[in-house]
Image 1 (cartoon, rainbow, N blue to C red):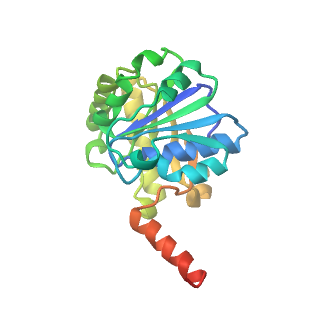
Image 2 (tube, rainbow, N blue to C red):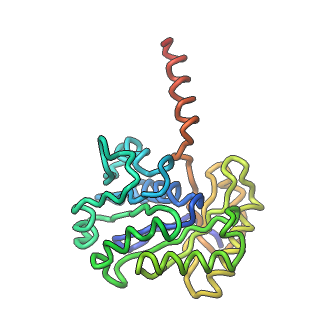
Length: 244
């Protein structure tokens, strides 16, 4: 029977996925979930060097308000598209005192940044989750998903430990789309032996999703990653309401 997601024991949890898979939204919502569950000493590391517009560092204020430390470039390096890796990141991974969530850029290109940190990851002590969206061009079928997984493993020099179905069309997402993604990723899990850890769904569809008898957990998402024009619209609305 489907249930809401439970805590994951690993201290180092990495989210990777195809460009546009929604893995950053999943990563920041997962961090928020852990905070709501009472987990303390949480850190989210923004390692996305691929997408200049949808990075977890954009949600720094929201995450910090939940007690989550965000490790990412600041000031002039905030919008950099080069791999800026502070020594703190490696030391946090090695120490495993905090729960560290890594949001990594899309595809194998983004996953290469993990290769430079490979000696910090101890086998069996991390989770590497591939986020799959059946509505993206290169992960619409089993063959595409398998290719994506292999390319990420090769680029990162790490082993994928779990799959996440994050099939959506943003505000146009329906229950059928979520089902479609689940069945696709379940096939990939059966072929590879990599467990399907959980699926995601917009919190607005919570009742519909929980009514489904799927043998998998679900992480309900609140949209935290806004498009640049949505951010600007929000700012204009605030000014209008304040009379500015």
